[in-house]
Length: 323
Ligand code: PBG
Image (cartoon, rainbow, N blue to C red; front, side):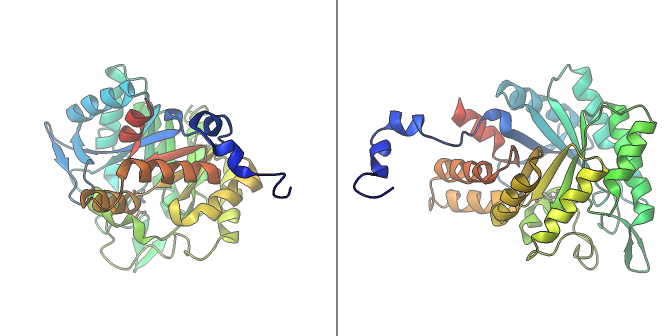
């Protein structure tokens, strides 16, 4: 292929030719919308560092989900902020927990959204870590039991899929066997398989009130510079029974998304996380960037890298733009 025989500009000459030769299409079907549910009634409180994202009580969540469904977005992922936190994360698996109640309300209201739940303990632990803490250590194996209980309680409440985000070793296996034993063999697991210890989660920790009271998450979340290790994490989760694997965050980890897709050809999600969202919102708010074009470019890039689905706080805007 040499110039002047080959001239790439020929197929860029007008919008129709560009549309015909386009390789990647972002679709509303690719989107998963994260939502934060809180106790109480009538609460719709904007998260300061995430303009357009709210703490929602159950009643307001129902209204929000109607909108989400009307926009054609297929799925949501729920995060819960409990009334009280303790050292055993008991709010995470309480039958009347904030997420469990929200799922029941959605199902009773006839919502047809795919309801995914974030399975983690950090929002429910007084110390804000994703596992049980003893003598300053985050314990792995005793945490698995609590995670499995949490996943089962979500399934019992009617969750369509569970998403473990804790990064304990062996959690997918523990959750899969508990779900199977309790009669939920058909509930899929979307595992946060390659989840990095990232500064991009900053705004989320305000949203979920889950900043660790001491230390950080580096003993369980992945070290930023590693990619071969991400493939091992993903392979483990697939072997343990994950149905969808996730890379998180997205933008600084496009290489991992590409390698994960190429290596495994498995259903792949990417999480366009809170900090990625807030940076765009802040710059757009100042008029420094074209928000719509920037968001579409970011999400199309994530998809081009190999993601089949994208968890993103931009989902509602994008669904509107795609219409
Ligand atoms: C819980 C969890 C986190 C996110 C999703 N699930 C925070 C963390 O690990 O600190 C981050 C999501 C985001 O930043 O948008 N473990």
